[in-house]
Length: 331
Ligand SMILES: NC(=O)c1ccc[n+]([C@@H]2O[C@H](COP(=O)([O-])OP(=O)(O)OC[C@H]3O[C@@H](n4cnc5c(N)ncnc54)[C@H](OP(=O)(O)O)[C@@H]3O)[C@@H](O)[C@H]2O)c1
Picture 1 (tube, rainbow, N blue to C red):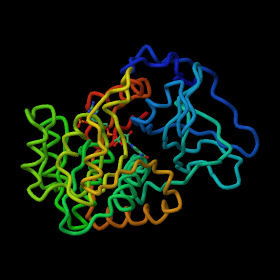
Picture 2 (picture 1 turned 45 degrees about the horizontal axis):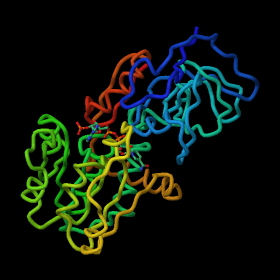
Picture 3 (picture 1 turned 45 degrees about the vertical axis):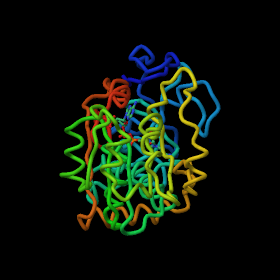
């Protein structure tokens, strides 16, 4: 039998296990010209939370009673497709099912001899591209500048900081535990790291960590952390708004500092983006990330959770900061 995970209820606030439902069905038989895939690695991502709401956004909402989808690495176990052979490994936006049929559209072959399979969900996948393109296209770092990254020890943040270092910047990360702050400095070579959960005065901690002010703020979290960074920005600062995880479970629209006077007086540019905005640059971005990875200039961390049945909890755990680096479920 084939286990499938459906969206049972739209979460209110932080998602809970009861929002998901496990069902089973017969393993499908692929029609001619299709492939049968076996799921190996499942990416859980903060943006999936937005797709669980019944609201219009840049990707359609998940439907109640239907399987959830995310980035998945799978193996072709049966094929009559002209481009995919039995044994091939592929990456795609697929359903939370142990086995599924695909017509091949949107599948990309990945090679475990080039890089471990799970890395195609992180550094060589969507989150690596988000870090690279958000930082270079909107942050436009110049050597000697100061970059602050929030969500710094996560999949996107840890790559942003390392690319900032490659580009000759001073990099300060904000994260939620002392262990992750240590990881930022030891593994990812950040110049400084701040634990926002234990800092009494985050605005002051950022001011001390950035004696020359903040030129680029790569924002993964929004909310009060971002308010504290914004009060430290320099003239002509650039602020790529990548994510706002601190607000994804909000049930009311929060009211924060009004940003216009800061942006105005600092001639600063704040720009939201969805990585797909830069899809024309994906091949070049992937190539650059793979080169840096091969040359040892980039590294990555993963939190691998074992077991298909643990996918919903791994997703929920993103909101408690359980992960360091990319959160992935190994099936
Ligand atoms: N624009 C795009 O195209 C795009 C693409 C990919 C991702 N994103 C966004 O980028 C951000 C990072 O994504 P990711 O995949 O790399 O996830 P991630 O950072 O690997 O995981 C989420 C992390 O967010 C932090 N967090 C959770 N709740 C928080 C809160 N209330 N306040 C502050 N931090 C909180 C936790 O770390 P701590 O322990 O540090 O709290 C957690 O580990 C997300 O906001 C995501 O939506 C955007």
